[in-house]
Length: 530
Image 1: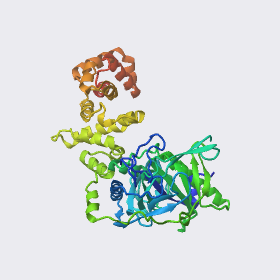
Image 2 (image 1 turned 180 degrees about the vertical axis):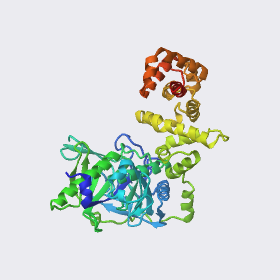
Image 3 (image 1 turned 90 degrees about the horizontal axis):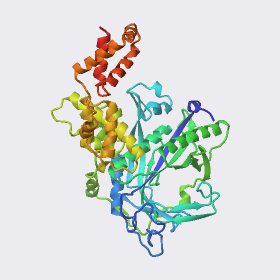
Image 4 (image 1 turned 120 degrees about the vertical axis):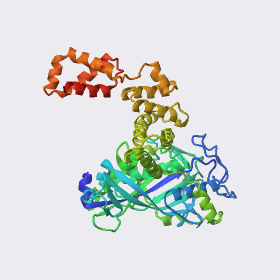
């Protein structure tokens, strides 16, 4: 295959996403009272409605409609007051009634957008970005320091019901191809499912990944879904086509399935860009088809020729009346909007003088964002701006590095009920800011807080970790070390300044690791320059 750089000179990728999200925080399904429960015994949470038995009538879940309106408001959508449900007909065993109840041309949420900050190596995927000056706009992007901001339109967010789950037995990859038989579990059938469809505004796999990551952040903040890609409660299909650079007519698209992680989304789209370019450059034809992304083989495989809208024979659902959402209902939902990630990042950046990088990473996860907020609120009101910034920076470092690493290693940990309370994190940060302990010791104390469920100062006292910052005591040790190593002193003064590490190490050893390394370093440099 060609390199991406070569492909982008000739071809422009056009990418759109369809992101399906189950409303897992609700108690019951979309049109019946069956329990929502992941991992339950197969076919135990079913009834005549979600099985589509004759005479069973659906009753809409009001809480689900509130959730999708909340999602629409959080993604800058216009809320349509008058909408209705349709029947989407298809013959497949995962839906016993042979149709899916979904919304038609007009959804609850229409015409929204999200702005994506693309930085680092991800920004390099955008063709021609280096030719755009900071502050200038080009197409749907605006150049900024270190990257750019992409404005991505949202066509709609509509409500539908999820299908059941097929389990294929006997195949090597759990797919229907090669299986000896298949089982179906209808527990998931009827689960409230939101589908967000973007405009074809994405141009790189990295933009697609960042969009889905940002949407997941928003949904988690709203508390409407657990957004578990492992459990399938958040799933993504990617639509991609290529067109000659400089032209506007869209090419034939393919749809990628099985994009069940951010990495799969990025890598699958990247592969398809290169594959389509090879086909077109050789004079071949791209067919509208659905393809499966195989992460182990790192390639896409044809699943089926893509259906068209006519194949689904969409018509209004006769068992559900049209909807009218009142202004009062919409405003009542709007009042439930929490502080969204972008808003929180801007607030803590301004309040504590943090960098945009730190602020954006702090709000990646709801739990860590709440931990930072609670710990930072303990900074005294009479602290100067520089003091607030110093403590906040240390809190941010702990959360972005140590706390995140811990949660990644222990994904089942509930941070809110863990031994790492906001008070303890604040106290640990103050011990480091006040130079009571070193950064190396701080990591040891952090681990001990979690393992022993103790306060930081108690741990420091028990282990005798308090740093010696007494200038007189440190000077006496330095004088002794320099007197013992006159040859190395001469070498340092002769230009081998790298020996400062040797002297610091000897001083720390003499003080049994309790000397203040920063102060030792400063005093050594002064002594050696005399």
